[in-house]
Length: 443
Image (cartoon, rainbow, N blue to C red; front, side, top):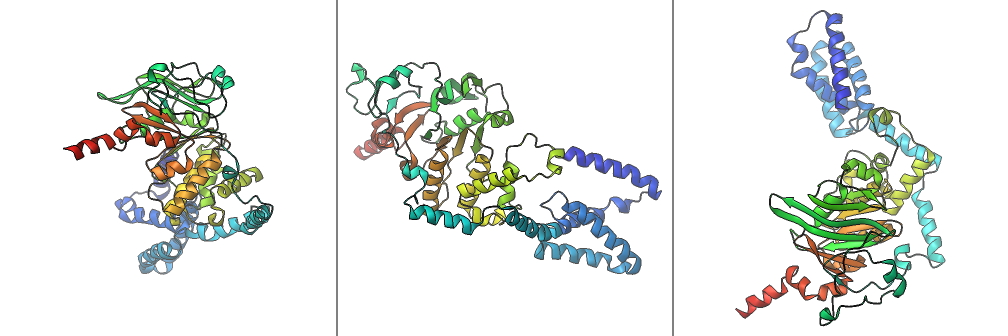
């Protein structure tokens, strides 16, 4: 887009000089720069066509006003800019276009809030008012394992009942809470992501140290650990933001992620939501999700050709219903509360239909009610895709965790159900500082 803008500016300059015959310093001074800002503000800064409409309209008024009332031009320019900022922050296109788009969506059948509420009422009447994540029963999780996150072999899966502990090593039978670490096996067909012996070194500091991590499809996994344990680095490696110095990162059946760039990994089906919400604050909630849809091309020409087929509208409406923002589809994203912005960004990620969703501290700064809604949202998302959550809030972890992985010094310290993780003495020492507190109390 910047290259295209530079080309257009260069062509305009080359054509301007022969037409006018002279180029004065006034034409490249402060006033022309201010005029361009007024064009965008008056036309609409949140659209592709707003600046074009603003430039044509303002220049037409300038040609008429400078001929009849030349002394009033600067006064009019300043008043136009102040009026646009104060009363029409979205410009002419926003003031006229958004109501038209809202009316068109209502005509073509985008879900109306009243219809959705009626559907929920009907479900509640038939005893189905709870979300699917609360209706579905989850199998008893396996016992906590120590040292590595590994794919269980097909023999182990076939010979064990759900919730039955793995065979223990007699040498470790004195430790009731943890099971022995097994050697890493080749990745099974049920896995979504598999890291083997991954090491990330930052100038001598090993953020990850021969990390082994495995995660199943349609699994909701929570990763906890003290600061500096390597949690965010784990997400960076999976998403391609950081390249490890050694190890393997396999996505799906056999796709090696290490040679791929971030955008290529995202197209494969790995979506990431960062801790700080990143939304287009000057666009509506609907437009934010629309821009995030997976398309064959997102280039300049494809963006200029506006497409709004029925399947895209359905996909947007479904996403907004999932994150419970249907009622605010036409509100500006910048006007949303903090929790709503987090949900919107989660919706923007799932609109890309990823197989694996990476979420970094999603409830930071949320109220208790927002935290509970976020937990229910992630559980519903995990019904048809894998979700990996990094979190510090232990109350939230207890709400959503089916399996917890504890990282310490860049490697897996312990893994298992949240109840057992909380009572593991090694976790209490490195994550909660229990042993250190006891030593300080003695002294």
